[in-house]
Image 1 (cartoon, rainbow, N blue to C red):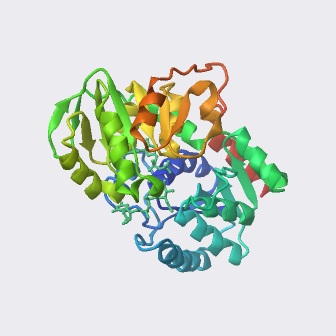
Image 2: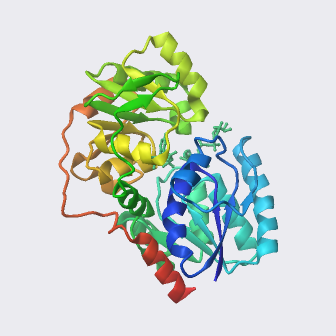
Length: 358
Ligand code: UD1
Ligand code: UDP
């Protein structure tokens, strides 16, 4: 079969790395990069480090409002579909690239395969919710990472074309952590280009969501909480809020919060795996903390990945210094025997189901 895969944002490159390896064993994959993430450390580094095949198309579309970005992607992906006439379109997660690709495909009557289906926050205030709901309702095959996502698909009467396969992010985590290339670094290069030795104990922070970055006060509260800890915090800064974070660092005279440029995936999972605590608003990083059995505090109002909350392994906090400090004090219990994210072979399962059902 000929499959057009559409990616555009950092976490989608990681999922595509795990998936393409399996998919290309028996199928032709045409890889389309919308261009949504474009800085070398937000895009190229993943293709190089993870040996992702070079995209067949780079649409070069980024920035602007949600409407502008999605509209431009819709037109550009449609042109690719007309030219390639694929048997199916494969999309991941819930970004604007996901929605645009799904809309283009459904209008051309091309089956959509949605990986990471069924996640719900039940609020349209979250900019990604509409992307994930609409994509699920347009898709022909829904691949859920976790049991709670299957429950949501059941409630929306989508269960008859949904499969619980596990999480391709866990596939990637297992594969690359086992590769020996994601060891704890002995030193780290900061955003200012300075090389510093890595301490034994540290916190890993990522914070980039629209909900937490559109208001400077939220970031201020988060940074204050981290500065009060008795260890350094390492914070790779997403380009969305780079200028604000640098300004806050000066205003707040931060000493223990060390800003980093965006990291490659191997370094990011190494930083997660060896951290004493993770504080994040990232869907990917909160799962990786769980995979690595590192306690996590997620700065968000919603449990986007309910399975990570078991045993208090992942706790929600408001963007509030005291609330984050309180949540960091709690001690979770990890259940080693039960991994709700699968067995590290989600991608094989997806391709097997595709072969059988498509
Ligand atoms: C997007 C996804 C979000 C996902 C995140 C992963 C949507 C609606 N949101 O959010 O679900 O968690 O990716 O990281 O699709 N920018 C750069 N350089 C880059 C990339 C972005 O400067 O390489 C700038 C853009 O120009 C824009 C801002 O960062 O001004 C936000 O980028 P955008 O892709 O709109 O949203 P993300 O916050 O990255
Ligand atoms: N990540 C990375 N470099 C960084 C920060 C995160 O490689 O500087 C990885 C992280 O380990 C995870 C993924 O990017 O695998 C998560 O992406 P992101 O937080 O951008 O998006 P989300 O998962 O929230 O959609």
